[in-house]
Length: 134
Image (cartoon, rainbow, N blue to C red; front, top):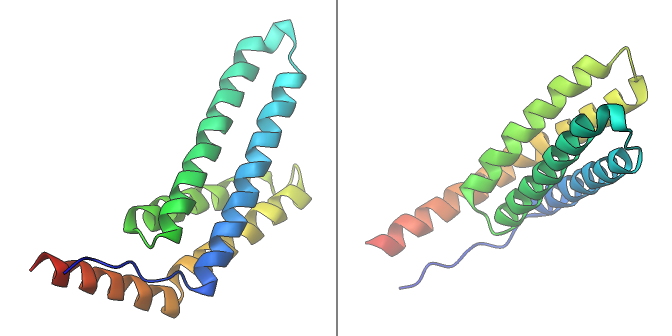
C-alpha cells in the first residue's frame, strides 16, 4: 500500500507563509546590498548577497518540505529560526525595530513548528511511513 502524506495543518500553513516572507526579505536585502556596491567593499557585498540568496533558497526549500510534512524541512526551519533569534538578540540595541521583527517572526514559526497539532501530524506521518514499509 502506498504512503499518503497528511495535509498540512493551519499552523504549518502559517509557518510556510512567514518563512516565505522572511525569504523574500532576505532576497530584497541581497539585491539592495548589490545595488549599493562600492569598489572598496565589492567582495564583501557580493559575498554577503550570495549568502543571503542561498539562505533564502534554503528557507524556501525547507518551507516546501514542511508543506509536504517532511521532517527535514521542520528541522531545517527550526535551526534557521534559532539563528534568527540570535540575530535579533544581537540587533536589540543597534536596530530595535528589526530586532523585534526578527524575534516575532522566529517565535511565530517555532510555535507553529512545535505546537501539539503539528507534533501529532508528524507523529501520524511517521506512523504511516513505517506502516507502508512493512
